[in-house]
Length: 246
Length: 241
Image (tube, rainbow over all chains, first blue to last red; front, side, top):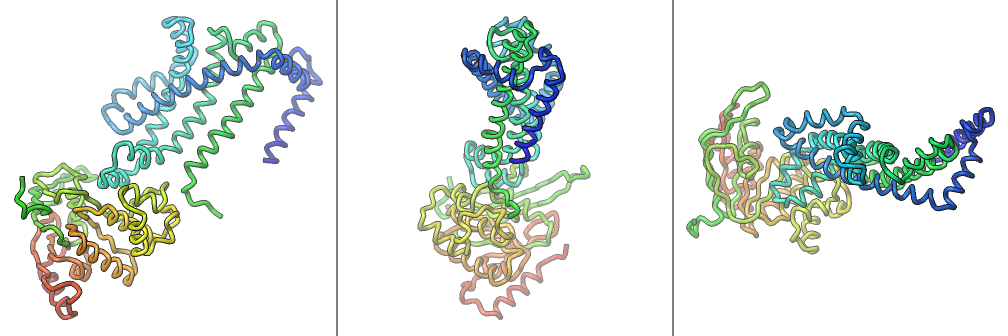
């Protein structure tokens, strides 16, 4: 923990030093950015933008994880589904995020549904592939045990399948969150009238780097918090049964 | 449907069971495999290793339906102790038992855990147990269900002799007071004689029943000489693999 903190302080010091020797319009120092942050926070705009963006991240992430894992589960279990859906997943995996976003804005319109769908579609194949890998490693012995003891489907899912998939869910969540929030900013920049991405676009129009960083940094910090206080504790909880070296 | 006398009968007739092995060849594992076991009796299947005993148990458990023939099971619950413990590593010992046997009461669970010597490990995870302990938990889970049909796949191997004996006695007591039909797969003739009411001797692959021995002496009253003569009869029927 101390090492992490020290490393973070060193990064800020380096930033301050670099800002000192360069044009403040191109690279404002920590003090200037903090002042811009305070102004944006005082007007309430910073928190509104963060809340709007966070809501989009949550919606797109939930949608992609739910549909993506369900599809990944089916593909891992049923060879036919795997053969049918695999080419689609490969196409989706390799389609640039920008193409999906622009196409959906054109087809569906410049609205919230198109924005969320575009982000979810970018993340979905990633979740599918990860969960499919997990399903392929499911222990057939435990499956037989559950069948011999006549576990109900719900009991089998909760006590036999999901605990085995937990590491894969954690991996999909970790890579998913970072992917989703980056794409949400692009979606906002291209076609939404609010959110962190929209504010960053405004800062870009004004060439205001301090404002840009004032929106980008708190949001990055918020995502780091989610990783540290939600994802990691979840991982620790689901792996508590693994014997640890004392 | 079935006559009153048939209630609880285990009647197995597997005409054929084939498998495709890793190199793509079709091998016949079971051929004309038939046996019957009345309710409340323990049947032991003895055969050379690799003869298809575990495949047969999977068919009896309803885990494998890809075979020619039919299996009539006693009505009611089924439980099984596999060759490996197959416990859920992310659930405690108690949760593993309760998941299989949700109806079990606290007193009953305690008595069962005490009898199998696992009471001290109630809140432990399977990863913290030795193999012997994990096997005992798997047996406790199989007993806790109060099944009508109990399937045991070499449940006492890799346990030290006194412990195996204690667990065998526990199984015998359990079957005696609950009228469970039990099928025990083993390659240990002594174990079969100690536990079974009827011993089925199997041929090498493709397996079929080549001999049946009724153990009519009450288990507790069996003398060493009687056990030896039974063992000799079993050995006389066996065909080396």
